[in-house]
Each structure stands twice: as C-alpha cells, then as structure tokens.
Length: 372
Image 1 (cartoon, rainbow, N blue to C red):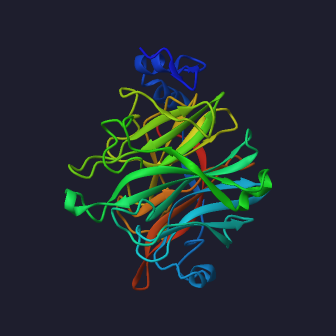
Image 2 (cartoon, helix red, strand yellow):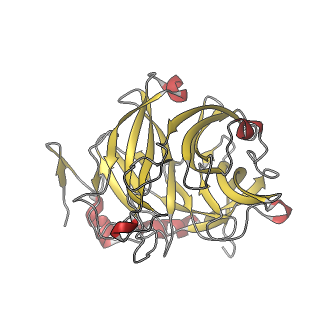
C-alpha cells in the first residue's frame, strides 16, 4: 500500500486528510455512493439563442479566425468573465493561438489580446506547433495568475507514427508578470514544463500524453487531472491524477492502479474543476453524446463519481452538429449567486456553407433526479 509518497525531501500522503490511497483502493465507489445519496442532477434551465461568439463576430473576422475555438477556461472575477481560449485561426485543431476575451454578462464578448502563439510549421521536430490552454488558476503563494497549456509535436511517419496526430504532449506553466488578481490580463511569461512523457509515464497514457492538465486545490494539496490516448493501436481517452505540494510543482503521478480514474468507459477529455459553495467538487469535461457534456462529483477532490451527461442545447436552439466529438469542450461551470451554473462551451456548427467551432452559453441547475 502507498502509505506515503516522498519528494522534495518531504513526505506527502497520497491520502492527505484521509489516507486516500488506501481508501481509494478499498472503496472506489465512494463518490458514486455520495452521488446517489444526493438524488439531484444537473439540468439545463436556459440557453443562449445561438452562439455567443460565432463566425461573424467582429473580433473573429478582425483577427482572421477561420476555424473557430476549442479548449479553454473561463473564470469570473469582480463581476467580469475572463475567457482564455484556443483560436484555430487556420486549419481546425492544427493552427492555434491562445487568446484572452472578456465579458460582463457572459453573452457579449470582446477580444483583448493574444496570450500565447504557437510556432508555425507543424512537424515532428517542432514541439510547440500546437498550444492548447487548459486552466487559468490564481496562486496565493506567488500572488499571481498561472496558465497551464499543452504543446505537441506532429507524428513522424518515418518512425511509424501518424503524421496528422498529436504526440508527446508537454504541460507548460506561464505566470502573469503583474502581481495580484488584477494581473489576469497578462502578459504571461513561461515558467517551465510541469508534466511530460518520460520514465514516470504510465502504460495507459499512450503516445499523445500528456494530453491536458487541470490543477485545483483540495485541503493543503494541489491535485491535477490529466489525459492520455494511444494512437497505434487506437485506445480510449482515459484520465489520471497527479499531485503536488505547490502549484509550481514538482508534480507526481498517482500510482497505476489508482490511475486511470474510472470516470467513463471510453472518453473523457479537457476536465475543468471547481469547488462548490457546499464544499464538494464539480468536474465538467468533454464527453460522448449529441450536444452533451459530462460531469462528475467528489466530496474530497480525489474520489470521483462516474460521469453523468447533461444536454446543453435543446429544442429549436440546436446549432451544434450531432455526433460524439462535435460538442467539444466545456470551458467552465461557474456557480452564480442564485445557485445556477454558467457554462461556456465550444461546439461545431454549420454556418452557411462553412464549418465553424463557435462558443455557446447555457445555464444549469440542480434538479431532483427523475424517478426519485
């Protein structure tokens, strides 16, 4: 049993607060049991009429964003929504930059700046030909904002890899130059790689890992959800966990057996976590299903329930295409003062004769589960 894991000259219990490694091994269903006791599920209660940022948004056309948006994260600070999002300015999922947008109502958005650019030329030798933002986190110890993003290289066909796929994801951390919460707008400076392929990689992670990274604090410990995927032979998209005593690391993976986390049978990606006002933790993520996202609940930030899917478009307002991978990425689930959750997300729609990954908005709320 993993009673303790050591790094940096100090012992860090994987359990931390409850000896979580042993508890996890003994009862992986703890979070799911809590979920059933809750007897409530998230349901969509309202939705914006069409995208909030679409193909004809003036800031989209002004910056020559041709394919739309993908991963990202939205935080709310002093009544303003701050969105850090990938813009696929040329080919979808190939030519990317990380942009910063703001809004006072989550419906009307203004582009402010480009935060991180990729290095042009997608080749096996270019480790930053794609940059995918995953998380924006304020670190009290540094008194600064941190951005975490993934950078990939392309596959090398001469080595039997798939040229069009992503390989050897590395998680970069960038920190705001201006101290304090007011520094969220940047600029940001790269501080180094937090997690990458190497001797500590686990068998389930595959050739794409590390594929995303979202850190959050539970108790006195930082945890992170990270993803993997194997191209050859093709496997699912599992999720694992890592931990650290400080946000800047060093980060250690949970041992295999605890990793990967049993969230879904085939696909979870781009997880976003927030702590609820009642102390629990809510995770939203990419999932299968038409116009759906997935979510999971945890009482301690470590034991997670199996996914529940929720529709985020319905009725006459469905603008995202049907299919498991077209409603792509929830960017947030912000708990508002009235108890509802503002969800921003990206999804692909057909606008005239063009495909475009637009940004949508809806509100979710807890409702009694049917049949209860």
